[in-house]
Image (cartoon, rainbow, N blue to C red; front, side, top):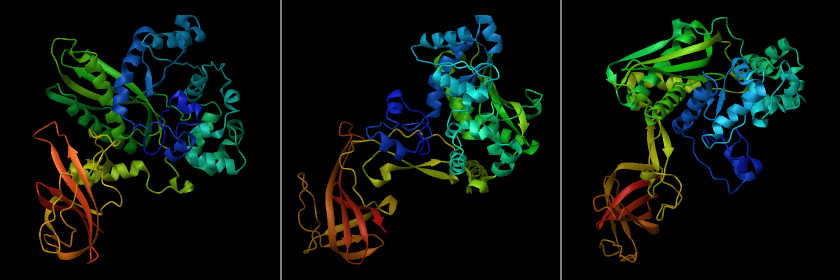
Length: 479
Protein backbone atom coordinates (compact mmCIF):
# COMPACT_ATOMS: atom_id res chain seq x y z
CA UNK A 1 0.00 0.00 0.00
CA UNK A 2 0.99 3.59 -0.55
CA UNK A 3 -1.28 6.54 0.17
CA UNK A 4 -4.26 4.24 0.92
CA UNK A 5 -3.99 2.63 -2.51
CA UNK A 6 -2.74 -0.78 -3.64
CA UNK A 7 0.48 -0.51 -5.63
CA UNK A 8 1.20 -4.24 -5.90
CA UNK A 9 -0.62 -7.45 -5.04
CA UNK A 10 0.18 -11.14 -5.11
CA UNK A 11 -1.47 -13.73 -7.32
CA UNK A 12 -3.55 -14.92 -4.37
CA UNK A 13 -4.77 -11.37 -3.74
CA UNK A 14 -5.64 -10.96 -7.43
CA UNK A 15 -7.61 -14.19 -7.32
CA UNK A 16 -9.63 -12.68 -4.45
CA UNK A 17 -10.44 -9.61 -6.54
CA UNK A 18 -7.74 -7.17 -5.35
CA UNK A 19 -6.28 -4.89 -8.03
CA UNK A 20 -3.67 -2.15 -8.29
CA UNK A 21 -4.86 1.38 -7.47
CA UNK A 22 -7.68 -0.07 -5.37
CA UNK A 23 -8.42 1.62 -2.04
CA UNK A 24 -7.55 -0.28 1.11
CA UNK A 25 -11.15 -0.36 2.32
CA UNK A 26 -12.34 -1.90 -0.95
CA UNK A 27 -9.46 -4.38 -1.00
CA UNK A 28 -10.21 -5.56 2.54
CA UNK A 29 -13.89 -5.92 1.71
CA UNK A 30 -12.96 -8.31 -1.10
CA UNK A 31 -10.30 -10.15 0.89
CA UNK A 32 -10.66 -9.74 4.69
CA UNK A 33 -7.58 -11.91 5.33
CA UNK A 34 -5.43 -9.62 3.20
CA UNK A 35 -1.91 -9.02 4.53
CA UNK A 36 -1.18 -5.31 4.15
CA UNK A 37 2.39 -3.99 3.89
CA UNK A 38 3.35 -0.33 3.55
CA UNK A 39 5.44 0.38 0.49
CA UNK A 40 9.20 0.91 0.83
CA UNK A 41 10.28 2.14 -2.59
CA UNK A 42 13.99 2.29 -1.73
CA UNK A 43 13.92 -1.35 -0.58
CA UNK A 44 12.07 -2.36 -3.74
CA UNK A 45 14.64 -0.63 -5.93
CA UNK A 46 17.44 -2.29 -3.98
CA UNK A 47 15.86 -5.73 -4.46
CA UNK A 48 15.07 -5.21 -8.15
CA UNK A 49 18.38 -3.70 -9.27
CA UNK A 50 20.18 -7.12 -9.49
CA UNK A 51 17.45 -8.30 -11.88
CA UNK A 52 17.86 -5.24 -14.11
CA UNK A 53 21.66 -5.59 -14.13
CA UNK A 54 21.40 -9.29 -14.98
CA UNK A 55 19.13 -8.55 -17.95
CA UNK A 56 21.49 -5.83 -19.17
CA UNK A 57 24.45 -8.20 -18.96
CA UNK A 58 22.79 -11.22 -20.59
CA UNK A 59 19.95 -10.11 -22.89
CA UNK A 60 19.70 -6.42 -23.83
CA UNK A 61 21.53 -3.23 -22.80
CA UNK A 62 20.12 0.07 -21.58
CA UNK A 63 16.93 -0.91 -19.84
CA UNK A 64 14.45 1.62 -18.47
CA UNK A 65 13.01 0.96 -15.01
CA UNK A 66 9.40 2.14 -14.94
CA UNK A 67 8.96 0.89 -11.40
CA UNK A 68 10.46 -2.01 -9.44
CA UNK A 69 9.27 -5.11 -11.23
CA UNK A 70 8.45 -3.41 -14.55
CA UNK A 71 11.04 -2.50 -17.17
CA UNK A 72 10.92 -1.33 -20.78
CA UNK A 73 13.48 -1.43 -23.58
CA UNK A 74 13.58 -1.11 -27.38
CA UNK A 75 13.00 -4.54 -28.88
CA UNK A 76 14.06 -4.04 -32.51
CA UNK A 77 17.81 -4.54 -32.14
CA UNK A 78 17.76 -7.31 -29.50
CA UNK A 79 15.02 -9.23 -31.36
CA UNK A 80 17.21 -9.35 -34.45
CA UNK A 81 20.13 -10.57 -32.36
CA UNK A 82 18.13 -13.36 -30.68
CA UNK A 83 16.31 -14.44 -33.86
CA UNK A 84 12.89 -12.83 -33.46
CA UNK A 85 10.52 -11.17 -31.01
CA UNK A 86 9.23 -14.45 -29.55
CA UNK A 87 12.79 -15.64 -28.97
CA UNK A 88 13.61 -12.34 -27.28
CA UNK A 89 10.58 -12.63 -24.99
CA UNK A 90 11.47 -16.21 -24.12
CA UNK A 91 15.06 -15.22 -23.40
CA UNK A 92 13.95 -12.41 -21.08
CA UNK A 93 11.71 -14.74 -19.08
CA UNK A 94 14.45 -17.36 -18.90
CA UNK A 95 17.03 -14.82 -17.74
CA UNK A 96 14.80 -13.69 -14.87
CA UNK A 97 14.08 -17.32 -14.01
CA UNK A 98 17.83 -17.81 -13.54
CA UNK A 99 17.46 -15.55 -10.48
CA UNK A 100 14.50 -17.65 -9.21
CA UNK A 101 11.88 -15.00 -10.06
CA UNK A 102 8.79 -15.52 -12.23
CA UNK A 103 8.38 -13.12 -15.15
CA UNK A 104 6.28 -12.39 -18.20
CA UNK A 105 7.21 -10.40 -21.29
CA UNK A 106 5.18 -8.53 -23.87
CA UNK A 107 6.06 -6.64 -27.03
CA UNK A 108 4.08 -3.85 -28.68
CA UNK A 109 4.51 -0.51 -30.43
CA UNK A 110 4.09 1.58 -27.26
CA UNK A 111 5.23 1.15 -23.69
CA UNK A 112 1.65 1.32 -22.39
CA UNK A 113 0.44 -1.48 -24.67
CA UNK A 114 3.56 -3.54 -24.03
CA UNK A 115 2.97 -3.36 -20.27
CA UNK A 116 -0.56 -4.73 -20.70
CA UNK A 117 0.71 -7.35 -23.14
CA UNK A 118 3.33 -8.44 -20.61
CA UNK A 119 0.58 -9.25 -18.10
CA UNK A 120 -0.85 -11.72 -20.60
CA UNK A 121 2.54 -12.77 -21.98
CA UNK A 122 1.52 -11.78 -25.53
CA UNK A 123 3.19 -10.20 -28.53
CA UNK A 124 1.10 -7.54 -30.27
CA UNK A 125 1.64 -7.38 -34.05
CA UNK A 126 3.14 -4.23 -35.51
CA UNK A 127 0.48 -1.53 -35.98
CA UNK A 128 -2.18 -3.50 -34.08
CA UNK A 129 -1.98 -1.75 -30.70
CA UNK A 130 -5.29 0.09 -31.05
CA UNK A 131 -7.21 -3.03 -32.08
CA UNK A 132 -5.59 -5.08 -29.33
CA UNK A 133 -6.45 -2.46 -26.69
CA UNK A 134 -10.02 -1.90 -27.87
CA UNK A 135 -11.78 -4.56 -25.68
CA UNK A 136 -10.14 -3.38 -22.44
CA UNK A 137 -12.18 -1.30 -20.00
CA UNK A 138 -11.22 2.37 -19.80
CA UNK A 139 -10.03 1.78 -16.22
CA UNK A 140 -6.73 0.40 -17.56
CA UNK A 141 -5.79 3.93 -18.59
CA UNK A 142 -5.08 4.61 -14.90
CA UNK A 143 -7.13 7.81 -14.47
CA UNK A 144 -9.95 7.14 -11.97
CA UNK A 145 -11.72 10.47 -12.46
CA UNK A 146 -11.57 10.19 -16.23
CA UNK A 147 -12.80 6.60 -16.01
CA UNK A 148 -15.76 7.63 -13.85
CA UNK A 149 -16.71 10.43 -16.23
CA UNK A 150 -16.40 8.25 -19.33
CA UNK A 151 -18.58 5.57 -17.77
CA UNK A 152 -21.23 8.20 -17.04
CA UNK A 153 -21.11 9.17 -20.71
CA UNK A 154 -21.62 5.55 -21.77
CA UNK A 155 -18.00 5.01 -22.87
CA UNK A 156 -16.86 1.78 -21.24
CA UNK A 157 -14.05 0.38 -23.43
CA UNK A 158 -10.73 1.70 -24.65
CA UNK A 159 -11.90 1.23 -28.24
CA UNK A 160 -14.93 3.46 -27.69
CA UNK A 161 -12.72 6.13 -26.16
CA UNK A 162 -10.17 5.89 -29.00
CA UNK A 163 -12.94 6.43 -31.56
CA UNK A 164 -13.69 9.92 -30.21
CA UNK A 165 -12.29 12.86 -32.21
CA UNK A 166 -8.91 13.96 -30.89
CA UNK A 167 -9.73 17.67 -30.83
CA UNK A 168 -12.98 17.06 -28.95
CA UNK A 169 -11.17 14.99 -26.33
CA UNK A 170 -8.60 17.74 -25.80
CA UNK A 171 -11.30 20.40 -25.48
CA UNK A 172 -13.39 18.37 -23.03
CA UNK A 173 -10.83 16.47 -20.94
CA UNK A 174 -7.71 18.62 -21.19
CA UNK A 175 -4.11 17.53 -21.78
CA UNK A 176 -4.35 14.62 -19.34
CA UNK A 177 -7.32 13.19 -21.21
CA UNK A 178 -5.59 13.80 -24.53
CA UNK A 179 -2.57 11.81 -23.35
CA UNK A 180 -4.85 8.93 -22.33
CA UNK A 181 -6.55 9.18 -25.73
CA UNK A 182 -3.21 8.81 -27.47
CA UNK A 183 -2.50 5.69 -25.41
CA UNK A 184 -5.90 4.28 -26.33
CA UNK A 185 -5.10 4.81 -30.04
CA UNK A 186 -1.81 2.95 -29.73
CA UNK A 187 0.33 6.09 -29.85
CA UNK A 188 2.86 7.16 -27.24
CA UNK A 189 1.03 9.22 -24.63
CA UNK A 190 3.52 12.06 -24.90
CA UNK A 191 4.88 13.16 -28.29
CA UNK A 192 8.67 13.09 -28.27
CA UNK A 193 10.98 15.82 -29.43
CA UNK A 194 13.60 15.27 -32.09
CA UNK A 195 16.37 15.36 -29.50
CA UNK A 196 16.63 12.39 -27.16
CA UNK A 197 18.10 14.54 -24.42
CA UNK A 198 19.20 18.09 -23.73
CA UNK A 199 22.46 18.82 -21.92
CA UNK A 200 21.18 22.26 -20.99
CA UNK A 201 19.01 20.69 -18.29
CA UNK A 202 21.52 18.24 -16.83
CA UNK A 203 22.21 18.81 -13.14
CA UNK A 204 25.36 17.59 -11.42
CA UNK A 205 27.02 17.72 -8.03
CA UNK A 206 30.69 17.09 -7.36
CA UNK A 207 31.80 15.63 -4.04
CA UNK A 208 35.05 16.98 -2.60
CA UNK A 209 36.48 14.76 -1.25
CA UNK A 210 34.93 11.59 -2.65
CA UNK A 211 31.84 10.57 -0.65
CA UNK A 212 31.86 7.03 0.71
CA UNK A 213 28.51 7.10 2.56
CA UNK A 214 25.22 6.62 0.71
CA UNK A 215 22.95 8.85 2.81
CA UNK A 216 24.67 12.15 1.83
CA UNK A 217 24.43 11.14 -1.83
CA UNK A 218 20.68 10.45 -1.39
CA UNK A 219 20.19 13.87 0.19
CA UNK A 220 22.03 15.52 -2.70
CA UNK A 221 19.88 13.55 -5.18
CA UNK A 222 16.74 15.10 -3.68
CA UNK A 223 18.21 18.61 -3.92
CA UNK A 224 19.32 18.00 -7.51
CA UNK A 225 15.84 16.73 -8.38
CA UNK A 226 14.33 19.98 -7.12
CA UNK A 227 16.84 21.92 -9.21
CA UNK A 228 16.02 19.78 -12.25
CA UNK A 229 12.28 20.39 -11.86
CA UNK A 230 12.87 24.13 -11.69
CA UNK A 231 14.95 24.09 -14.88
CA UNK A 232 12.42 22.02 -16.81
CA UNK A 233 9.52 24.19 -15.59
CA UNK A 234 11.37 27.36 -16.62
CA UNK A 235 11.91 25.88 -20.08
CA UNK A 236 8.29 24.71 -20.33
CA UNK A 237 9.19 21.06 -20.91
CA UNK A 238 8.84 17.69 -19.18
CA UNK A 239 10.91 14.55 -19.55
CA UNK A 240 9.71 11.01 -20.13
CA UNK A 241 12.97 9.42 -18.96
CA UNK A 242 15.56 10.28 -16.36
CA UNK A 243 19.08 8.91 -16.20
CA UNK A 244 20.80 8.88 -12.83
CA UNK A 245 24.54 8.28 -12.89
CA UNK A 246 27.50 8.34 -10.54
CA UNK A 247 31.17 8.73 -11.25
CA UNK A 248 33.47 6.79 -8.94
CA UNK A 249 36.88 7.78 -7.69
CA UNK A 250 38.48 4.99 -9.71
CA UNK A 251 37.13 6.46 -12.98
CA UNK A 252 34.17 4.11 -13.52
CA UNK A 253 30.63 5.32 -14.25
CA UNK A 254 27.41 3.56 -13.22
CA UNK A 255 24.02 4.61 -14.60
CA UNK A 256 20.38 3.63 -14.35
CA UNK A 257 17.46 4.96 -16.43
CA UNK A 258 14.00 5.53 -14.97
CA UNK A 259 10.93 6.00 -17.17
CA UNK A 260 7.80 7.68 -15.93
CA UNK A 261 4.60 9.16 -17.29
CA UNK A 262 4.19 12.43 -15.43
CA UNK A 263 6.33 14.14 -12.83
CA UNK A 264 8.74 12.17 -10.69
CA UNK A 265 8.79 14.01 -7.36
CA UNK A 266 12.09 14.87 -5.74
CA UNK A 267 11.38 12.32 -3.01
CA UNK A 268 10.61 9.62 -5.57
CA UNK A 269 13.90 10.30 -7.36
CA UNK A 270 15.78 10.21 -4.05
CA UNK A 271 14.18 6.88 -3.13
CA UNK A 272 15.06 5.36 -6.50
CA UNK A 273 18.64 6.61 -6.32
CA UNK A 274 18.98 5.36 -2.77
CA UNK A 275 17.70 1.90 -3.68
CA UNK A 276 19.98 1.59 -6.71
CA UNK A 277 23.03 2.82 -4.78
CA UNK A 278 22.38 0.33 -1.99
CA UNK A 279 22.00 -2.48 -4.52
CA UNK A 280 25.30 -1.52 -6.17
CA UNK A 281 26.97 -1.38 -2.76
CA UNK A 282 25.56 -4.78 -1.77
CA UNK A 283 26.85 -6.25 -5.03
CA UNK A 284 30.31 -4.76 -4.44
CA UNK A 285 30.12 -2.61 -7.57
CA UNK A 286 31.16 0.53 -5.68
CA UNK A 287 34.30 -1.11 -4.30
CA UNK A 288 35.41 -3.03 -7.38
CA UNK A 289 38.19 -0.59 -8.31
CA UNK A 290 41.14 0.79 -6.44
CA UNK A 291 40.06 4.14 -5.01
CA UNK A 292 36.75 4.24 -3.14
CA UNK A 293 33.99 6.81 -3.08
CA UNK A 294 31.59 8.75 -5.32
CA UNK A 295 32.97 11.91 -6.90
CA UNK A 296 29.98 13.06 -8.97
CA UNK A 297 26.21 12.58 -9.14
CA UNK A 298 24.44 13.37 -12.43
CA UNK A 299 20.72 13.59 -13.27
CA UNK A 300 20.08 13.75 -17.00
CA UNK A 301 16.53 14.20 -18.42
CA UNK A 302 15.75 12.50 -21.72
CA UNK A 303 12.93 12.56 -24.27
CA UNK A 304 11.84 16.12 -23.60
CA UNK A 305 8.44 17.35 -24.72
CA UNK A 306 6.37 20.46 -24.20
CA UNK A 307 4.71 20.79 -20.80
CA UNK A 308 1.00 20.96 -21.56
CA UNK A 309 0.01 21.65 -17.95
CA UNK A 310 -3.15 20.25 -16.38
CA UNK A 311 -6.77 21.18 -15.85
CA UNK A 312 -7.13 20.19 -12.22
CA UNK A 313 -10.38 22.11 -11.69
CA UNK A 314 -12.14 20.06 -14.40
CA UNK A 315 -12.30 17.02 -12.13
CA UNK A 316 -12.71 18.89 -8.85
CA UNK A 317 -9.04 18.70 -7.77
CA UNK A 318 -7.60 21.52 -5.70
CA UNK A 319 -4.17 21.13 -4.17
CA UNK A 320 -2.28 18.38 -5.97
CA UNK A 321 0.49 16.40 -4.23
CA UNK A 322 3.06 18.15 -6.42
CA UNK A 323 1.87 21.59 -5.32
CA UNK A 324 1.90 20.56 -1.67
CA UNK A 325 5.40 19.17 -2.06
CA UNK A 326 6.70 22.37 -3.67
CA UNK A 327 5.13 24.53 -0.95
CA UNK A 328 6.64 22.36 1.79
CA UNK A 329 10.06 22.53 0.13
CA UNK A 330 9.91 26.34 0.09
CA UNK A 331 8.99 26.50 3.78
CA UNK A 332 11.82 24.11 4.66
CA UNK A 333 14.27 26.24 2.69
CA UNK A 334 13.22 29.30 4.71
CA UNK A 335 12.71 27.85 8.20
CA UNK A 336 14.76 24.67 8.28
CA UNK A 337 14.44 21.02 7.39
CA UNK A 338 12.30 20.09 10.41
CA UNK A 339 9.93 23.04 10.03
CA UNK A 340 7.48 20.91 8.00
CA UNK A 341 6.74 17.44 9.30
CA UNK A 342 4.19 14.74 8.63
CA UNK A 343 2.63 12.41 11.16
CA UNK A 344 3.41 8.71 10.86
CA UNK A 345 1.68 6.14 13.04
CA UNK A 346 3.86 3.36 14.39
CA UNK A 347 3.86 0.66 16.98
CA UNK A 348 3.86 1.23 20.71
CA UNK A 349 1.60 1.30 23.73
CA UNK A 350 1.40 4.94 24.77
CA UNK A 351 0.21 7.86 22.64
CA UNK A 352 3.68 9.36 22.38
CA UNK A 353 5.12 6.01 21.28
CA UNK A 354 2.66 5.56 18.42
CA UNK A 355 3.17 8.92 16.71
CA UNK A 356 6.36 9.95 14.91
CA UNK A 357 6.97 13.35 13.36
CA UNK A 358 9.00 12.81 10.18
CA UNK A 359 10.40 15.81 8.26
CA UNK A 360 8.53 16.25 5.00
CA UNK A 361 10.40 14.54 2.18
CA UNK A 362 12.40 12.22 4.42
CA UNK A 363 12.04 8.47 4.35
CA UNK A 364 10.39 7.01 7.44
CA UNK A 365 13.09 4.89 9.05
CA UNK A 366 11.13 4.12 12.24
CA UNK A 367 11.83 0.63 13.53
CA UNK A 368 8.59 0.15 15.46
CA UNK A 369 6.07 -1.80 13.46
CA UNK A 370 2.44 -0.64 13.69
CA UNK A 371 1.17 -4.20 13.78
CA UNK A 372 0.81 -6.00 17.09
CA UNK A 373 0.41 -7.49 19.40
CA UNK A 374 1.04 -4.65 21.84
CA UNK A 375 -0.11 -5.86 25.29
CA UNK A 376 -1.06 -2.90 27.45
CA UNK A 377 -1.76 -0.59 24.51
CA UNK A 378 -3.88 2.39 25.50
CA UNK A 379 -7.51 1.88 24.43
CA UNK A 380 -9.74 4.53 22.88
CA UNK A 381 -10.65 7.32 23.29
CA UNK A 382 -7.27 8.77 22.50
CA UNK A 383 -6.00 12.02 24.09
CA UNK A 384 -6.04 15.34 22.29
CA UNK A 385 -2.83 16.69 23.82
CA UNK A 386 0.30 14.64 24.49
CA UNK A 387 2.94 16.40 26.58
CA UNK A 388 6.52 16.11 25.31
CA UNK A 389 7.61 16.19 28.99
CA UNK A 390 5.42 14.53 31.60
CA UNK A 391 3.81 16.84 34.14
CA UNK A 392 4.12 15.95 37.84
CA UNK A 393 0.76 14.82 39.23
CA UNK A 394 -0.83 13.48 42.39
CA UNK A 395 -3.65 10.96 42.72
CA UNK A 396 -5.00 10.65 46.28
CA UNK A 397 -7.87 8.95 48.09
CA UNK A 398 -10.47 10.47 50.43
CA UNK A 399 -7.91 10.62 53.26
CA UNK A 400 -5.45 12.49 51.01
CA UNK A 401 -3.17 9.48 50.91
CA UNK A 402 -1.39 8.67 47.64
CA UNK A 403 -3.08 6.00 45.56
CA UNK A 404 -0.70 3.19 44.66
CA UNK A 405 -0.93 0.09 42.47
CA UNK A 406 0.20 -3.33 43.65
CA UNK A 407 2.03 -5.90 41.59
CA UNK A 408 -1.33 -7.62 41.05
CA UNK A 409 -2.75 -4.35 39.62
CA UNK A 410 -4.93 -3.63 42.65
CA UNK A 411 -5.52 -0.01 43.66
CA UNK A 412 -4.71 0.81 47.26
CA UNK A 413 -7.92 2.88 47.43
CA UNK A 414 -10.47 4.51 45.16
CA UNK A 415 -9.11 7.74 43.63
CA UNK A 416 -10.77 10.83 45.07
CA UNK A 417 -8.64 13.82 44.05
CA UNK A 418 -6.31 14.50 41.14
CA UNK A 419 -3.81 17.34 40.91
CA UNK A 420 -1.62 18.19 37.94
CA UNK A 421 1.15 20.76 38.08
CA UNK A 422 -0.05 24.01 36.56
CA UNK A 423 -3.67 22.89 36.32
CA UNK A 424 -4.85 22.86 39.92
CA UNK A 425 -6.70 20.15 41.83
CA UNK A 426 -10.13 18.62 41.27
CA UNK A 427 -12.27 15.77 42.50
CA UNK A 428 -12.26 12.51 40.56
CA UNK A 429 -15.56 11.84 38.80
CA UNK A 430 -14.51 8.53 37.26
CA UNK A 431 -11.58 6.46 36.10
CA UNK A 432 -10.57 3.54 33.91
CA UNK A 433 -7.66 1.17 34.26
CA UNK A 434 -5.03 0.51 35.32
CA UNK A 435 -3.27 -0.89 32.26
CA UNK A 436 0.18 -2.30 33.01
CA UNK A 437 3.14 -1.96 30.65
CA UNK A 438 6.31 -4.02 30.97
CA UNK A 439 8.70 -3.24 28.14
CA UNK A 440 12.13 -4.63 27.31
CA UNK A 441 12.45 -6.40 30.63
CA UNK A 442 15.51 -8.19 29.29
CA UNK A 443 17.47 -4.92 28.99
CA UNK A 444 18.31 -3.42 32.38
CA UNK A 445 19.02 0.06 31.00
CA UNK A 446 16.00 0.31 28.68
CA UNK A 447 13.42 -1.68 30.63
CA UNK A 448 10.31 0.14 31.79
CA UNK A 449 7.49 -0.90 34.10
CA UNK A 450 4.56 1.49 34.38
CA UNK A 451 0.78 1.49 34.66
CA UNK A 452 -1.65 3.94 33.04
CA UNK A 453 -5.06 5.20 34.13
CA UNK A 454 -7.65 7.45 32.54
CA UNK A 455 -9.00 9.95 35.08
CA UNK A 456 -12.12 12.09 34.57
CA UNK A 457 -12.23 15.11 36.91
CA UNK A 458 -15.31 16.89 38.22
CA UNK A 459 -14.18 20.17 36.60
CA UNK A 460 -14.69 18.64 33.14
CA UNK A 461 -11.08 17.78 32.45
CA UNK A 462 -9.80 14.29 31.70
CA UNK A 463 -6.24 13.08 32.14
CA UNK A 464 -4.04 10.20 31.15
CA UNK A 465 -1.90 9.44 34.19
CA UNK A 466 0.90 6.95 34.58
CA UNK A 467 2.74 5.73 37.64
CA UNK A 468 6.42 4.82 37.55
CA UNK A 469 8.56 4.01 40.58
CA UNK A 470 5.66 4.98 42.83
CA UNK A 471 5.25 8.48 41.36
CA UNK A 472 2.32 9.78 39.30
CA UNK A 473 2.73 11.78 36.08
CA UNK A 474 0.31 13.37 33.61
CA UNK A 475 1.21 12.02 30.18
CA UNK A 476 -1.67 13.52 28.18
CA UNK A 477 -4.91 15.48 28.39
CA UNK A 478 -8.26 14.73 26.76
CA UNK A 479 -9.75 17.85 25.18
